[in-house]
Length: 89
Image (cartoon, rainbow, N blue to C red):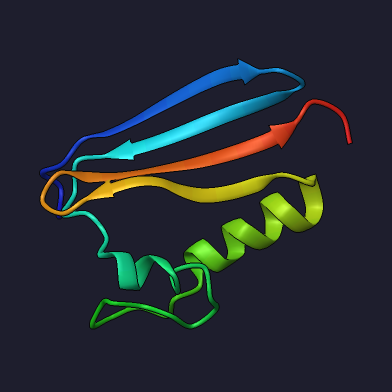
């Protein structure tokens, strides 16, 4: 996005959980890339370590009992990630 995009965050209560949507207006993520983006060390960038999303997944799922996923992604339109956190763990 390089400073030209928009990021929106939506927080909703869903049953006994909280859903957090992170919506960007970036370039989108190809479906074959989506399968790997949460793997440690995986990156599509020239300069990157591929740790960001793997850390998010580890913290959300391992420490909070939640779930993180790509809810939708359209090339040229952006991506929506969803984090679901249980009300009580």
